[in-house]
Image (cartoon, rainbow, N blue to C red; front, side):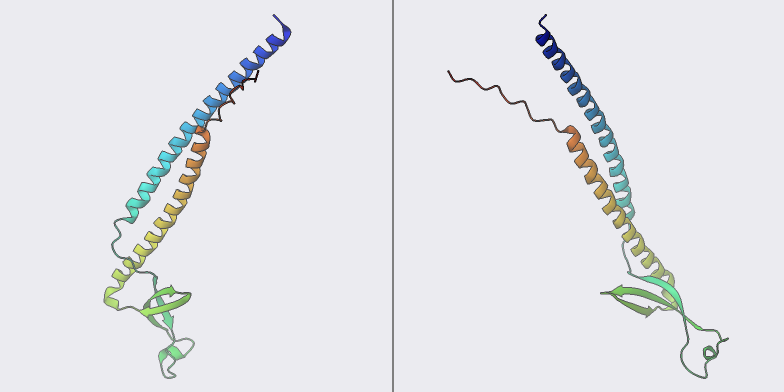
Length: 159
């Protein structure tokens, strides 16, 4: 067999095997990416399920605030005297913090509404992160599935 033909044939076989190996590796990678996407989708659904039951939200935090009233004859005026305690809702609006004293009969309700808001915001943030991860996986999957462009057709020679 001619040495040049044998060399060309060997090169063709090697290139064909490399393309086949590359295709198998690419398909394995695509399969792993599909599995990862399914897992992310399950996580996404869990976050949605945590978010949907929340019916009412109250932005802010509920806590006990201890202050001095400022009256010189009050027990809180001395350094050793107990401070006045009131439960407040604190929230920010356009960069400004607001405080509102809450009625004692509804403290548990306001605490629950503020907790609902916190859970809602956490679930939303988790959904944003999951969405970004899903998009990155989808981009990688598209890259793994993409075929190279076909070889250029042989041109006919003009006679």
